[in-house]
Amino acid sequence: MPNVKIYVEESLLAARHNNFKAMLKPLRDTLMAEFSAPQSVCHLTLVPALGLEDQTRVLVDVHYLSMPERTPEMAEQAAQALRAVVVRETGEKPAVRAISLGADIYVALG
Image 1 (tube, one colour):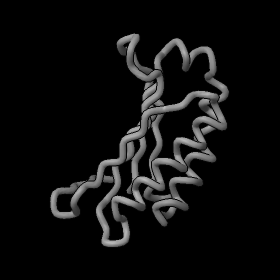
Image 2 (image 1 turned 30 degrees about the vertical axis):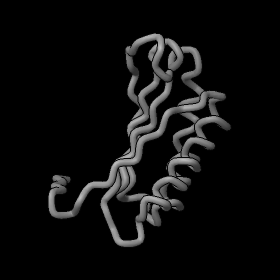
Image 3 (image 1 turned 90 degrees about the vertical axis):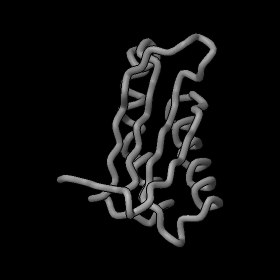
Image 4 (image 1 turned 120 degrees about the horizontal axis):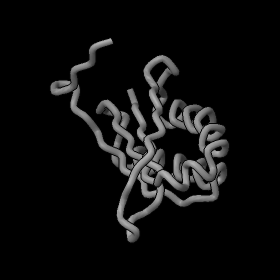
């Protein structure tokens, strides 16, 4: 784990579908590098969204398993790197949230 959901306002996603699709690979590569995680535990999903006009059109929501080396500073650096990929690939500046999950409360079924 880390898992990423990228919420994209549905009309923007329709207009730039190819840009967002092409963004997934470099975004996953960045995610793997920033969190020192293998591909097998990284999951990315694009989610069409309907939101209010005064909200950001793109939100990157990152959930990652807490580890000693995954400090708040490291998470902020990762969020900045992920934002940079989205900007470079789509021209949109997303909001980014990084949420740490404790191993004691995390359950995963494969």
